Structures are given as structure tokens and as C-alpha cells.
Length: 126
Image (tube, rainbow, N blue to C red):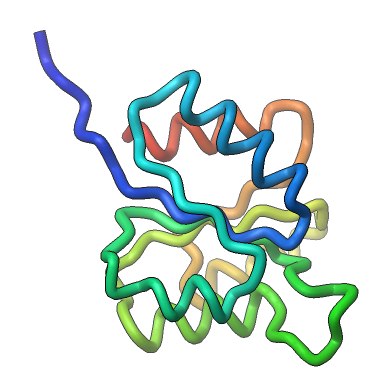
């Protein structure tokens, strides 16, 4: 019987309810260690903890215009460590947005829909 590796997963979303719902789903369906962040800056400061995967909200800080958005945080993460897989998580279903995120270093682009949590769990478990 094979054991799945426990991964350190960072969830970065300023919607705390969404973060907590995703955390709950992942902890019920995986054994991963989950860390929640409401700002990209806090995530960046914690990269020294060597996450195995980061789930990043595309519309991060859409209310707080002074804070960095998801795309800027993606670029900052990739400048510091290109090897960390980043899933961009968004309600944007435009092909151009998905393509832009992949071109800037996202490993996957997942649309926030009814199957999103299952898709993210599958990616985290692979």
C-alpha cells in the first residue's frame, strides 16, 4: 500500500470564508498541512517555510487598491522561487486571463466554480 506524501499548502485569498471553506475541504480529503494568508505580502514573507504548493486568488486585494493583486504576487513568488507550483484560483473565466497567468508562471488556473475544490484537491494530491 502506497502512502501519499503530506504537502505544505499555502492558501492566499482575501475572502476569508472562501479560504476557510477550501481549507476545510482539503483537510477532510487530504492530510496536507494548510496555511492561510489574507495578503500576498504575508505569503511572500512566509516562503522561507518552503510550501509545496500555493493556491493564489487572482482577484487578491481587489478592495484594497494599495495592496498587491494576485498577478503581482505570482510574479514576486516566481522571482523568489520558480520551483514552487502556484495554482491561480479565480472567478474570471476568460481564456486571456488564464493564458496570462500561465505565461507568468502559474502551474494551473482553476475557475471558482462548483468543482473547483475537487480540482484543487486532485492537483494537491498529484
